[in-house]
Image 1 (cartoon, rainbow, N blue to C red):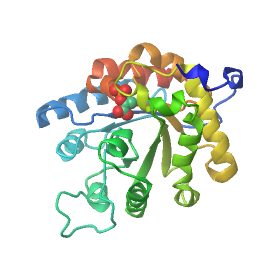
Image 2 (cartoon, rainbow, N blue to C red):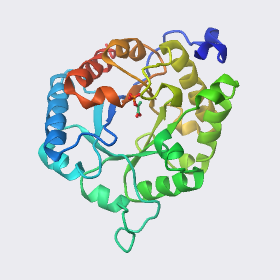
Image 3 (cartoon, protein in one colour):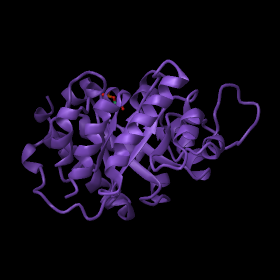
Image 4 (cartoon, rainbow, N blue to C red):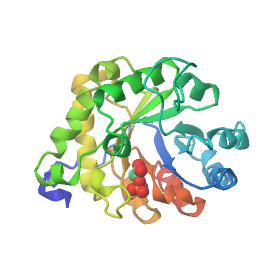
Length: 278
Ligand code: PEP
């Protein structure tokens, strides 16, 4: 599906990773139903990660439980090495106050959260979050000491109209001044073509790699100190396509939805990215 837009001859030849960290991040969205199930899932993921982390320390794993489950999951995991991710954050910098329904960035930080997703397509499209709101969330997260996973990606009609690259780069450009103030330890980019999220339709590894290269080239010019930022792919990543994605030179990790909801399907994805280092 993607090859109509991007020139596959642009795929860069195999080159060293230059020491970029590998990331396997699970986005649980509004799952599972109960706190107990969330804790069991987290423990299962932790076990799979523990089997890899000593041998492959340059592969890191994170999970993004829903807000109702975050604290129980954090408590259950203790000080083990998985990163806790929040799926959303309030769009202001107040730590506490009269903001019904909000969870502030300082509250997330105090609960042990390390990263927050900003710009996921479900927030952009279902909740109508535009770049000004996303920028406020990004700023609030950074001020509280959280890292940001900035999600970008085009919709199907944009891809079919040949707009994929323009859309993705515009989504990055909307946060350029913030990105210029961040280090590679504070931000990850997740490229998630909307048409591949939860659909079973995956960008081919080569095509995803091309878009990652475009993103990296853009950042290298606009924000040179982020030229080695880790860029994750998201969109129907499964155990059976993870190794091919992990073998791509510009794909530094994955943001996984459906397959992150069972340790039996998340585990092989962790292993694919961990072992791709060698
Ligand atoms: C996501 O929600 O970020 C995602 C990539 O979902 P899935 O893996 O289910 O396509």
